[in-house]
View (tube, rainbow, N blue to C red):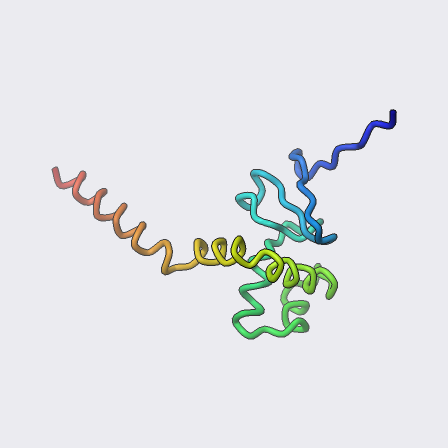
Amino acid sequence: MKEMKRKIYRGKNIENTEHPHIIKVQGVCGGEPIILGTGIMVRTVVEQYQLGSSIEEILWDYHQLSSAQIHDALSYYHDHKPEMDRILEQASYEYWQPIVQKVVHEYAENISE
């Protein structure tokens, strides 16, 4: 019986996706999907695209990416929209602002006691 070789990324097991350029690695970028061989999160490409950047502009900003990788990242987003929308929301200022305010408020109360 032929033994399958494990794929490793930065010492951790790779979780392949159905998208050839997209992987997930537990403990790398919080387990978010990343572009294979770059460590660039799919979220990063999606955010740039949603902010109005063209594929060419994203290629300019991230010269290590290929057009195929960018298109695959956008395709992954559309194929996993609920998961990606949750990731995008949790990476937003609006999501973290109330949490930060609560922590700061609690810290200030603890210091004044």
